[in-house]
Image (cartoon, rainbow, N blue to C red; front, top):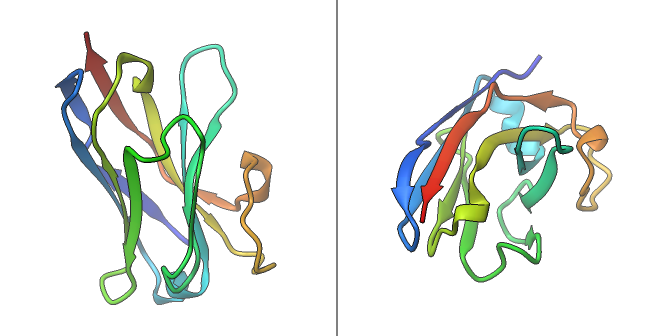
Length: 126
């Protein structure tokens, strides 16, 4: 079972930056596609970004494209989300997730991810 722990959330002004990190408990992490999702109260958890097992390819939601960057360090069992030019509408709880099925394709719905972290709050003030 993969355990994921996020860190790096906080309060930032609009236009600022934050870097989220997610640490995985197992070395098998390096075989998994990884994703970041976010959720606001009353809404479904939504896809933000994903990265292949090697880090060679990434995918982003249109709402964050050009502002957020997902990356991973397989030697350290971590995946990160660099968030720049933050907007108030980016305010949410951010979750990292592991896609262990290994289909070779990016997945964009939360049901397609098997393991989740506990989430970290990001608040962007206007």
